[in-house]
Length: 353
Image 1 (cartoon, rainbow, N blue to C red):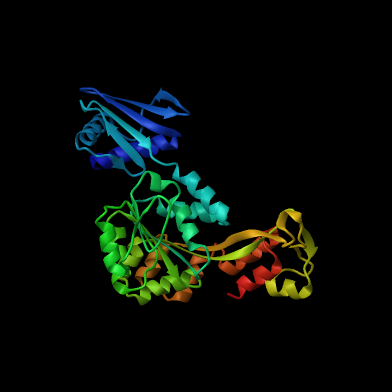
Image 2: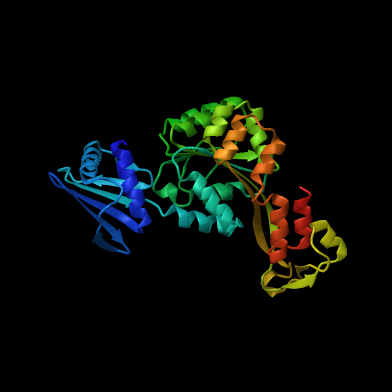
């Protein structure tokens, strides 16, 4: 295990203890480790690393000028005898909150976090124009634009540098000259841009890409149509999410009603199923709706999906595996209708694509 990997393993164990900071005091033949948990420092003995190996790793990291290790900011004292790690962003919480505000269910948010916590990799956000893809990419970034270098191409995001006046591969090459930690792309429209995006993902940088496609499988097929190398797809693609926008029912005036036989049949509900409708009120200016909410489907490219991709599985087989235990857009819309988040007409519309 390399020195940096050893310290990252230590930091991961510390984070599991609830630590926001890790302090290592390096002596000639020992290392004292303290964690800051809930604002207080306490002594800690890590179980994963032997004292001698920990000391050598800490000295190496302190001496090589490293300032970042994964999600941790690294600072070392000028005498090389102290090393401090600070968690740069509480990404899981920020990510879940941001995605939940858009309409993503907790299980989907947890999955996409799990698939993106490793360095590098590419996440695709798909949907038609006007479906809220930019907001989803911003939510996926969370607060990282404040602590990491985020560069975007054809996609304006708060706190990020944006490449203007160039498109495709040339724009990505210009973005790379700015040494980003995270690259966000407004489109993957041509073969050269797609190939370079996957090369960037393989280098350890995270890549987020917006794709215009009706659903997640279609977005994946778009990448295959651009002739992205099969091995690159299997190794670097972390997740593909697709979305639509629906009108959110006003929570003040919505009320439960019994679905008609026709609506129940269209939505695949049992006869007499309860749905919701809104007549309009002062809170929603008589509209019956209060803004928009996202409806999502998500494909996580876990090892089993990666094997299918590497084996050249067709779209039907990929879909069967991907949505075995996860909702597609139509079933997600039906679930939201049952919960009273959207009305039956919206669920039917989304179910028809």
